Length: 131
Image (cartoon, rainbow, N blue to C red; front, side, top):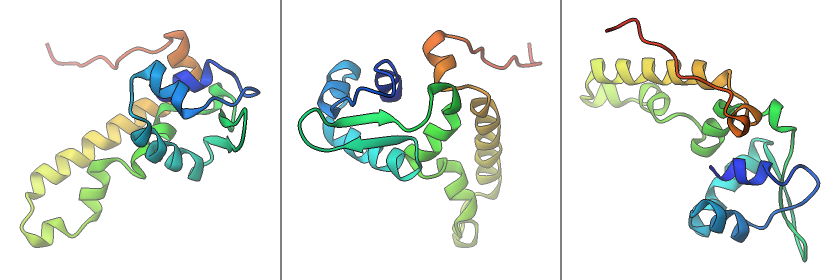
């Protein structure tokens, strides 16, 4: 995860996207798009020039996985489908409702996990009541 790579450097040392791309094996062009959303949503700050790059805009414990997902996608994909006029154009209402529910569950789960938790491995998957 690119944000984990960034968080490893703290909030004082800007990290170039090329370094994050190399460490996370992600293309720079994808990271440019990703970090534009992260910057727009106040999760990262950018610095230009020599020694420039990105830093976390807030401490890692104050950034949730949900914040990152929403910033990366501008909204979760199922939310976009649920809010579109897809049902009016013949979309499958049950599928859209299910995807919206899954999106809500994902949001609730990831809202309780900070970037700091991810770095420390302090999170567990929710248990299912099904056997």
